[in-house]
Length: 252
Image (cartoon, rainbow, N blue to C red; front, side, top):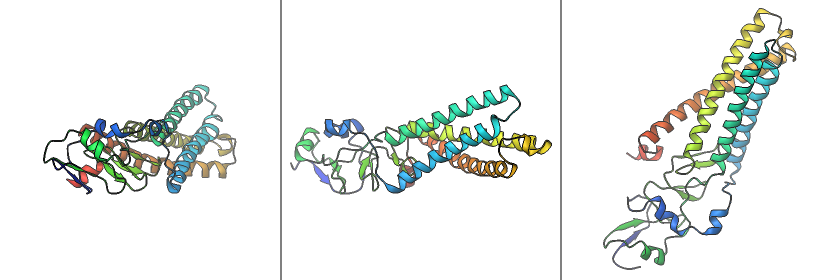
């Protein structure tokens, strides 16, 4: 390495490299690979997410809407809820299977350093774990085992980091989940009120105890999901508007 610049082997950041420069060292084979993190906890959490969304869709469709005596009430709410559920799961898949902005591994070579045309005395930083030159606001994720550009956090529920390339999909995912949670809670409240006025056996094709248990669990799920995703959606929008990440806010 020439004496005109120095390579610091530390976990810090310097406003020298941007995302485009960091991506120069990526190979064609790496770009063609499907991004998927093989983490046991993350895969279980992603499965639970899909299961809970599909469970909510089942309860709303088969317990509350199909037995309804109002045709248009069932059709309108069924179309809206199922469309939001499809959008939520699609956004989840895009978040999980999109490269969040991984810096190429092992690009801290003498040849690549010389191609940067650094000024004498400039200091750049190398990740000591994946041997990559770290752009500004890049952080190393111990689960993904890569440095991620503009890394916000690693979310086990999407089994991936939230970073430069997939944050928009994560924001959409939290928004759609918050919307279907609100919709499910509203439908559950209306269903409870309706069933109290008439016989429970007339409100659903399932037995009254089963109907009550399914709806109570749906309400608990909706409250939990709505609280979590609404808060996360708000923090993500705030981060985007202020061009910052959770890690950057914590370090200030």
